[in-house]
Length: 311
Image 1 (spheres, rainbow, N blue to C red):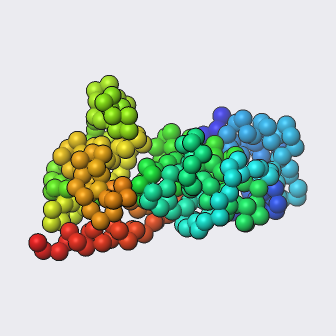
Image 2: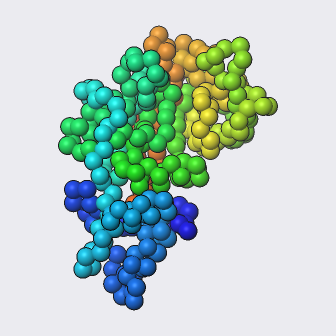
């Protein structure tokens, strides 16, 4: 059995050679009586390789031991799966396993089926093509269309399986900055209220006893004139969660007309004052704890400055 993300220590440093990953696990394998069994144990328990992927690599000759080097066929060529669009992409972090890109306001992460509009997936596809890699576009999480911040992509099947499981285990942490109307009191630290669809408005969500469990933590705040800057961490990832929870408590976001927020300069474009500040995760291969920051966009900096000034 492979171990959970919290128990594995990861595979350490690696070298990519075309479709192959090369690592030198050391004495744990070179000193073993049965190197094949030691390799399997290392991959499943230390690296945390999903069992189905491990079995397929074994079956297809994708695990090779040469001298003191272990070679794994983790980077086969794949089609992007979506048409590339050649617009500027702001890359916050990238290696052979994952990419974290900034999502601007007004852009969806993925197509909605209408065939209209450029999405972050389209831009990531073009980035992969330009880099010369055959990589399928696989986003690990999403942001609302008008929320800015980092979005993570897996660049191979191994990374996708591990990161998807980490999302389910809630070991990927997302920290947001939101500017809301009113003074959010220090006593409000956790909003634990289920969220469901609003039967009177197709695009809205609402706090509902019959909804899905939703937990939002407020881990920092700053009182402004006419509003509050709050730093928010999600334990769950429900649609519009931060917007619904803060509005339900009486503190709707600036610019969030859908949930009763006041107008601000970027409201005309439907922009609400919510930005993903940091994304923290364990690297899918190495096990290293990663933290990727995304600087505030200019419109939120301007709103904070405006509300910081004395009336």
